[in-house]
Length: 232
Image 1 (cartoon, rainbow, N blue to C red):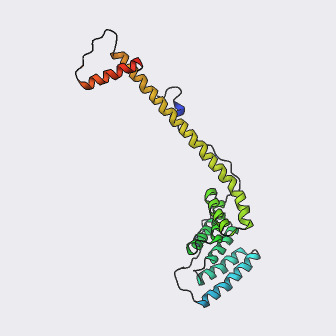
Image 2: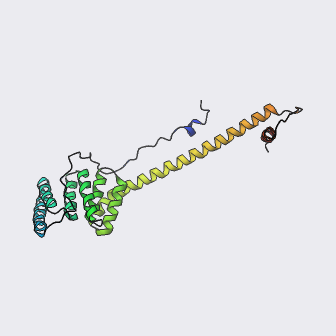
Image 3: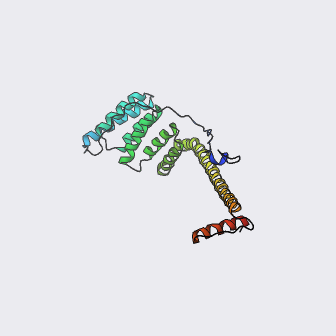
């Protein structure tokens, strides 16, 4: 049974919720979109056809026809699965459709082909923000900004960074509280052991008692008890 004043040391620290800003969407659980094989050889003819489908996709996007844009861009990707920009462009459409998981898959594919794809990092950062993964989002958006800064990235960072700051402060606060708790627990344990040693010394060492020592270990134990009793 815990003694008075000890329960706060032994109990787990219950973390409070953090009030964060920004819209978080439910993860999309659609079947994965069609992805090409980036290791295949692509002829010039197929590259040209892919560009035509890309243009159709971009035109559909500008008209707000998101599903149609996805269809055209998917055709482009199947024709030329070695193009990072095609995956990144389709990822951007999935962002507009509020499908962060699909956007992340495309962004990952783009970055696998081109690790310096600013659009890949941008799309993945925006997708992570939609899922409430603020620290991951901030990381990707900062990389995107270094590679190719634009106003959309800047606007997204202004929404993401305050949440990251709150999360970091929250972690620091509870890390400090846990350290304080552990230090108090250690101090309480030290005092408890000292009190037990003093109590043991009082029980076995009284004025006028004759102490029989049978071994060097027993001598050391009783000497220690005597020292504890005397506060040495």
